[in-house]
Length: 100
Image (cartoon, rainbow, N blue to C red; front, side):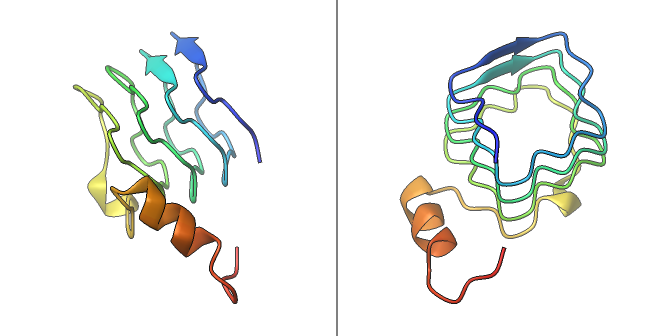
């Protein structure tokens, strides 16, 4: 679990990053490569990923409420079961019997 809450990340090479169950809420992430990264179950609510690349990144079960992808390069088939409501996503991720 890593928190990048409200972080400002510009022009970074973060390919092959393992940051599952992380918080990117309200982060501004521009011109950054997240290619092939593991970002499952992370909170991207209100994040700005403009002009970034998440090609081949696994982003299943993420919270994407208000996320601005701008012209980011992404693959939607690796974004399964994402939620566009942070309240619902938080309820689901804290439900009893859920495995992580």
